[in-house]
Amino acid sequence: MPHATPLITLISAGMVLAFVLGWISQKFRLSPLVGYLLAGILIGPFTPGFIGNQALANELAEIGVILLMFGVGLHFSLDDLMKVKAIAIPGAIVQILVATLLGWALALWLGWSHIEGIVFGLALSVASTVVLLRALEDNRLIETQRGKIAIGWLVVEDLVMILALVILPAVAMALHPELSTSSAKPLWLSLLITLGKLGLFVALMLIVGKRAIPWTLEKVAGNGSQELFTLAVLAIALGVAFGSAKLFGVSFALGAFFAGMLLNESELSHKAASDTLPMRDAFAVLFFVSVGMLFDPRILIEQPLPVIATFIIITLGKSAAAFLIVRLFGHPKSTAFTIAASLAQIGEFSFILASLGVGLKLLPEQGRDFILAGALLSIVVNPMIFTALARWQKRRKMQTQEASGNPESALKNHAIVIGYGRVGKHLAKLLQDRGVELIVIDSNGELVEQARDNGMMAIRGNAASAELLNELSVATATHALIAIPNAYAAGEIIARLRSANPAISILARAHSDSAARHFFERGADGAVLAERELAHSMAEMVLNDPSLITAGK
Image (cartoon, helix red, strand yellow):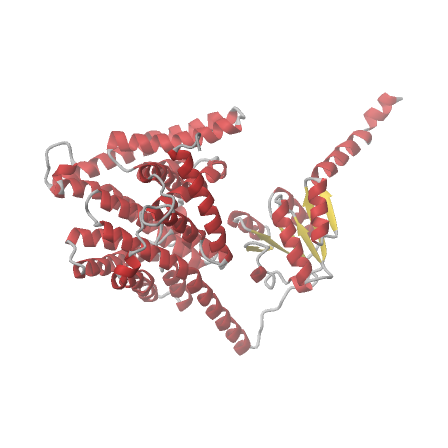
């Protein structure tokens, strides 16, 4: 391969393997993160065959961390956190303390130092936001009160971990003076200097960045160039991250988080999030691949007991603590079980903290292997926990309904509107105005809230999911109106609807003749080509204009 380079080879091998293994993982109803980590293990130095360049992988991982944290900042809402602060803030802090103590105890049993035990415990204490959101979406819990508590809980965990990322370098410099090029300082002085730099950075971002970042994007957006806008968003994320690290000594992750958080207040935040999502996803995949490259699978055989103990701390220890905390605050068992299930895994922040700990000599490499092993096992098991929880809650609901003699009635002779975007919103309003009973489904939580605010029955989820067909009452519906732009997803939905109810009338929105043919092949009764209908409508307006008729005479 005369044109191959280490960078292109690493990206190509990592992406291809991550795609294949991520797709297989999803087919087995596991998180794609499992596949990405396995891809890294396969191209890592501890397995036979191709070995990727670890140094380059770490560089790509840094970009992944920056874009991941920028995305977290874009979706960080202080208002949402304030709504559940009474339980999320004290609950998350106590749960972090319990998990850290459990990890510290295991570390002492393994003969590690106190600081190594604390770093190890901290890495085990924080759950993955990516895994949690996927689990809540799959089980349609994001819009519920317990789902909002779980998200708020993890936001607090993320903030604590960001603070830990800031403090750990100062601790390392005090404990290991050889890591610093300057003379050694007492721990209290190192912490004071670090917190001072952090305070200066935060003040600068809140005073200057809060105005400069949204203003810059508004000016760029006004030029009408899509590529310049996307470039501006990426430049802000990477530039702030790099500048914060070089000028203030804070982590790339913190700088990127603040850039995203300040941009969140702008009206352009949703556009910024959607435009950068493909690149964030791509580099996030490379981040997980690079983490997998660090994992030595032999530890599963050579050190099974510490691995099992780590897994138990993650899935049982901190989850049990969270369950008790939620119950002590007076919340019902359903909420306590949801929070416990949400925390029964670890992910991206654990990897970031573990990598930093090893680099700063605050965590042995063996500890990182235990963390990676525990993460893999917990991510595999977590969807199973949520599935078991959903079945238990469904049985309880049915038993309650039977006991009350008031079973939940299903919709009949209604229309299903799939997609509440620009087209679906107008379509649903027209049907509602004409007294048609309908139910709306969309995967976007904000659009679902808008539909509910407009007095419509709406649920969040993927209409292609077989589990949602009962909630949509497809068997008793008369019409299904598909208003989503993705032709392939629409085709899959059409096939599932037709299978569930052969008599239902299915109409779909199409953008081309080939898409319309695809819909008919999958079982649609009709397809509307949006551009063609728009052209007809505009032509009718022109032809019916009296002034044109007069001019023609």
